[in-house]
Image 1 (cartoon, rainbow, N blue to C red):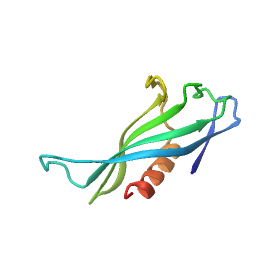
Image 2: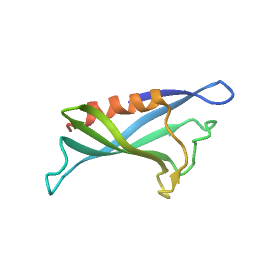
Image 3: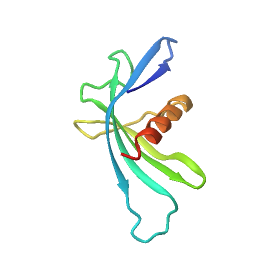
Amino acid sequence: MCIIVRMNTLQRMIFLNITGHSVEKLEDPFGLLSGDRYEFFLELAVDEEDELYSDQGVGLRTIFVSDENGDKITNFYLYEIVSEKVLDFELEEDEEALVLAYCRENAKE
C-alpha cells in the first residue's frame, strides 16, 4: 500500500491510497525498444471530499519503463473503474514520484 498526500485549493490534506494493482509485462515483438515495459492498473481509494472521488471507483493506468537510463513513467491517466471513463486530472510531481516507486517495487512480479 502506498499513501499519497495531496493538498487541494483549500489547503487541507487529502489521502489517496493505492489499494491494489494488476501488472502485465509488455512485449516488443520487433525488438525496437530498449529495456522492459510494464502496464500497471492501480486501484485507488480516494477520500469522498477529494475532487478526484467517484462512486464508480478510481484507477490509474500507467506505463512503467525500466532500461539502461533508469526507471520512469512514460504515460498515465486516471479513470473511473466501472465506466472506464478517463478523468481530466494530472498527478503532482510528488505523486508521480510515489507512483514510480510503487511501480518499481512491483514490476518484477
